[in-house]
Image 1 (tube, rainbow, N blue to C red):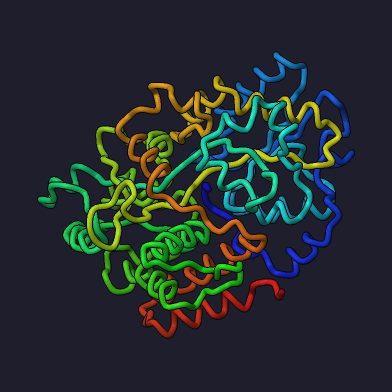
Image 2: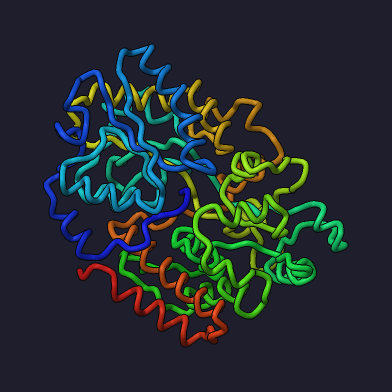
Length: 437
């Protein structure tokens, strides 16, 4: 899922949502009630700016209107606002007809009852469920239930590295393990430049990396029966290892503790940092003036050995899903729009624009997605990525743990000790914020 998610979604908010009677979009004041020939669409901020997203999307929406006569009112919503906006819409009934959601939120938003279930009948209206790749369908809702959304963009994390900075430091190849990354990062952290960029004030990025580190330690944040388990040894070790890249290893600038969405990408594009861990970053880097010849791409490092297919987890299954509010006034139009956005033509156009991978099999086969960089991302998604837990409280988990990591980065930046005990205490505090069962 693309960053940044809401920084604070309280348990009280979700408890209200979970008791709401599926009151989604399409209201006379918030949806398409003004005309059956109009849809309201909330798109997530995928590019380097909201304006870039509008330039990408508006021509496609105009194309849809020309084909169907249905006008689409577009609003690109920043990730910092999106989750809270959606939760508010599920309770107020004043939301859009169609919206983007981070794929990791699927089960949480499914639990509100506000989203249209994608049963066989609805899938048939957009060409069938078997058009989508299995890994993308795995992050569309709780297991055993009809999906709450359909995949739109697929992404994976990778390590991006500045070729010239590596060559100048005498580093011949990208690091494959975290020990190698730390060693390389120390060589590269000099003359006002740093080895690795991060966004410590971005809860979404924090939880993604904490989850991957935990997976590499054979741990998770929930028990087998779906109960929060944030303070197990593997989870504590994982979070400490990630924050220690700043606190102990000194390869992340202390100022990165205050970084939010896209600031680490900007530093990398400007040559201020030598490495970046990011989801499908090519389009973002290009929009900020960085040539594809200037950087390389490799799998995210692992604890030991060689990363890659079937070895160890080095990404979460990232992506964006497309959902429909169940009580839209224009269900037929909304389904037509989803069919349009997930059709082969639009899948190629949009995923090229965002350097993401089409979750539609036939579109993914296009030669445009066979570049070396995309090969890394596709192999990661197919072989060595893990889906975040598809549980009803997933969005609270992301917010609570992501914010805990944010606070630990603030400690590191201020020179306060980050210890196993302080990490466990931060995660215990996060677990206490989860809704009571």
